[in-house]
Image (cartoon, rainbow, N blue to C red; front, side, top):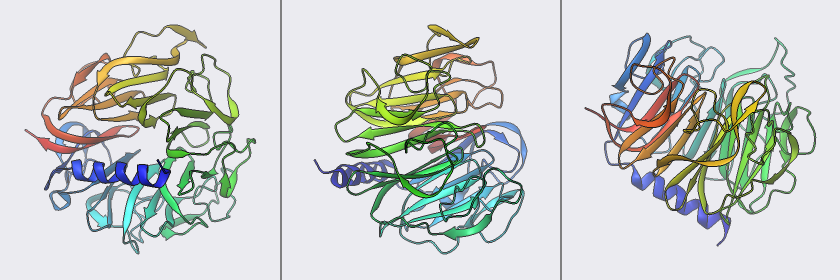
Amino acid sequence: MRTRVALGALIAALVAAAPAGASIVGWGYNHKGELGAGFISKPHLPVEGPPALAGATQIVSTYFSSYALMPDGTVWSWGDGFFGELGSGQRVRAQLTPVRVLGLAGVKQIAAGGAHVIALLSDGRVATWGGDYFGTLGIGTHGHGTPGFTISDVPLFPDVHGAVAVAAGGGDDAAVLSNGTVLAWGENAAGQLGDGTREEKDVPTPVLGATGVRSVAIGGVSSHAGHMLLLLANGTVLAVGANVRGELGDGTTVGRVVPALVPGLFNVTAVSASIDHSMALLTNGSVFAWGGDEVGQIGVAATASCQKHGCVTRPVFTGASGSAIAAGRGYSLVVWHGEVLAFGLNQYLQLGQIGPARTRPTPVPGVSGATSVSAGEFHSLALGTVH
């Protein structure tokens, strides 16, 4: 099966899965209005997001900002926009109502990491906006973590053509091309861009040895490196970058700068990555995870000790099955028959309920009809309903 056909079918299935009029539901930190409920609060239990965005086909949460892709191909944003990440032409600290990202139409997919955003357009181009601290916008400006980095509060267009999928995380971005290869750019301090170096890349750069790629997930925090997962059309996964907590899933804690196969993973349909852990969804619905597990984000008791922190260096079954996954900062989400299962850190109510961290998948109370989820650093979003 050609990569383009497989990815197109996947995107169509995800869009079709969202019921007409599905609401945006949010929970967790709401310091900048990122839950979309129209107010600022301390951590909050599940609440309905912007009513005007009912029917959204994709939602994205990152740090203190949130995004929604609408059926008409427009993108809307709310929350923190200090680094221009709202794409509205203004820099604001707390946008309580959704604003439209300027100059974009025909958007097929969005992704965000840190204070930057990337969008896939129907013509195969990509758009980026927000902070450019590490060349993250892919337009050739040098960041290197300096205070004088570029900010763009409107979308810019890196030299990418023929893209069919995009990803973002930490200080990095990636675009999967129609021929199954991948371009990536950004911080790259741990070699997570897979080009054989640990040098910042300010323009799209080929990922070495990446062919037959279907989708990509990037985990990390700007200035603290990260890792990248590449899902292949044959259902296997490649990994590259930081491996301090075993996030590459190869049984070691040794990082690498060129992608290599994650042993023992087959029939994978989706991947997700956060700061120090990774997730994979299999065709039979089983959810596997690996990496840091010090707060239960893998869903099992840690089986090894990594620098005095619990970790799982090979993929293990989390105890959860479902139809969608999302890896957040120290926690994980799984959609299971309309419910959202959550496990891991709960410092900011990321699990959607009051209480300590949980090491086993637990339903998020009050959320039903969920079809997709997005796990950020401190807050979560879902397409579904609140009851």
